[in-house]
Length: 232
Length: 108
Figure 1: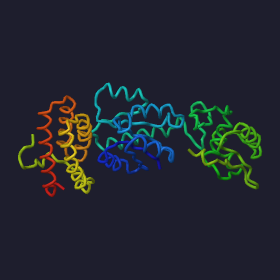
Figure 2: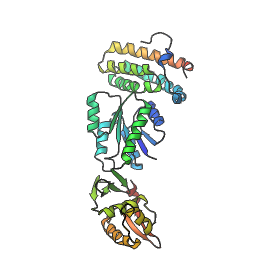
Figure 3: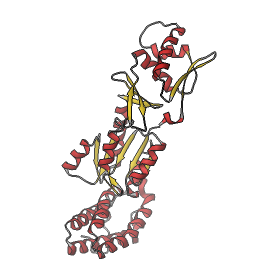
Figure 4: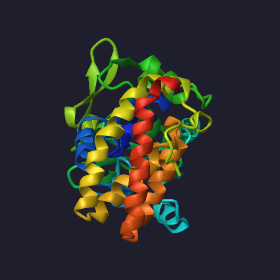
């Protein structure tokens, strides 16, 4: 279930949003400090942000998210009583995907969130196990959370699909046939299960220094082993 | 605005799934009246504007558009520091919240 982080200092508004978004895993924070703690412990699929918060500006927070490798492409919605065009335009300039004014209609909030998540599922990118997969360009980057930057692993298209498949099923052994089916399913190419080993060997080298490691599982195939930090 | 002792029930449209939350909602509004009065006594216009800004945001979704309207007016007067108008509007708002509190059985 998608996790949504709702940041607003007014409990009455938070309750309305919680009811409107009951189909999602709803998290709420009364201020930015609380929000940041929640972000350390969870991965969110969408943010809804008030502008005037007790410990800072929602605009600044949104800008920070936009510059954060992990959340730059995560949908962000402002929910504010600020109704001027200038505020709305500034909100979009800060990286917001939508701007809803208070008082709001709950059904509208639900519909807008549904739409944003639907669109984001047609995925431009996805972060898994500390790796960011960009599907448009078939680029995979290793995320350095501490320094908030990312390093391109320079993968071939096959390696990209292979690593994505292993990442989706991290810490689970996949046999060669499963991997071949997932990785080459759409290509129409026949690959011998053992043919995958060369790609795995190259991927292992490219993953050196990351929080992930491809391990061989005797009698089965391969598994992507991740360290706890890589799950962020 | 609301200076008499009756509520215009036609103005109140509480969504069915919110009805159970209305007593809690009104209790919070009653509790915050003291805070509003204190800010007014201290001429703390910034805090009054902040509180009114919130009131503007939540009144209508709970079914009380008039609460949102009061929020808008109080916020405007607080921002422009129009003390007399602000006092009058806060009085009206307090009366209205008290009326809602006392007569909640009529609309829940």
